[in-house]
Length: 551
Image 1: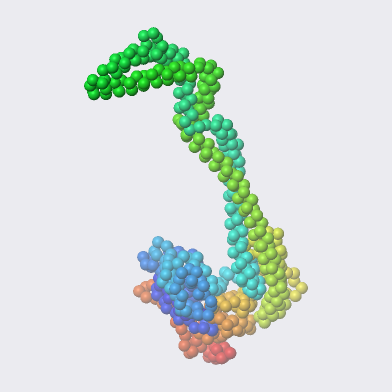
Image 2: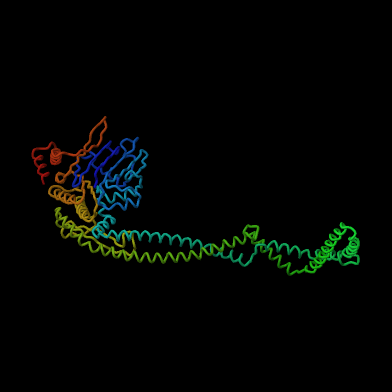
């Protein structure tokens, strides 16, 4: 229930404090006094768009604060979900600075506007004069049917599944687009990979190939020089090893006479053995080197291939080519994984769609079941409002596509007179008829929901006399189950309220401000009498006002 409203620096309001009671509260006042300004302030709390132009003093911020008694409305889960402090008496605040920037608070904790909207949707329903147009809206019409069907849990489950379904659809679209792009590149990547794979590159191959080719290209000179060296060491009649052998014998013959000579002999022997080994190795190397034109041709072609690939990929080493090949292999594997992932998402999407269709059919069945009841109860209420022949007909069409609310299209059709064709509301109903129809629907919904507070802004448009009295009676009945606040210009309705707030203008320092006061019993008589009279209340009007207040 709405307990208190505080407004600062908004439109014509400088500073305003209003306490609200349960039951039916009436708000009256002269045209232009600021009755709808109060609704505008409450609409800010409900999450409506902020505008710096609504500030009375453009140098100061606007503050709108309300307190609600939320005990018994099962809202603790909301507070837990958003990590907010739960209190039975909860304070909501909206601030707008001179630059037009807005801030929202729940129990003094900053929150997003979306969070504020979500909470106030459980607390208050503001029906402005323009909301009657929403009767034609599919969202509102569906909400009416669903309120009667009382399948919130199923709707919430469906809504959650539908969001996941749309996410899967988005994911599949992204993957498909990625696959299309990948297919454009796939052939190119595959060609590059195959080329590098067929090359069978090895990490040290380039260096070894260059060395071998260098050797083969200079084989004749290498063999000649190796042969000469080997011959000089061990081939000629006066070869070096033969001469060294004679010297070795001479040194050995005298080594026993002096230790130092023995050491020289040992070193000489080592050198001799090393040179003899070198001579053998020179001969072996000379034998191993064979001039092979075919091998030279192969190695040249192999190096040309390596150089070509390095130039093509703008690298300088085989290791870099191998890294490129591995990267291409990874991309090709990614494409294969992409195809697998697409198939997986398609399967998930198909399963999600089947689940949604099952739930949507159950939702449709629930809606179909309650439509006759709604039509009957609305007709009864319209008859009570002197529209005995008026009827509401609800068309339900099952669509082939899933939507966020199921698979139904709901259309409200209206006939005001017996024998008249049913037509869409905006084509057949007058303003007064729409207002009465909306009141009937709102009163029925109030019975189905636990909404604490509903506010009507001149829902009595287009009615008067006996019908106005019946409108007031419906509001009185609604007020037994919830807090009802209504702005009215009709005395028949004003007399039904348990509480009466009067909006008026006052001047201070050559400026006009809106103000509100709670009327006493005597003040109520005078106010209703004014509403009954064209000018100064007559004795008859005062007597009539007293009579209205007694009913």
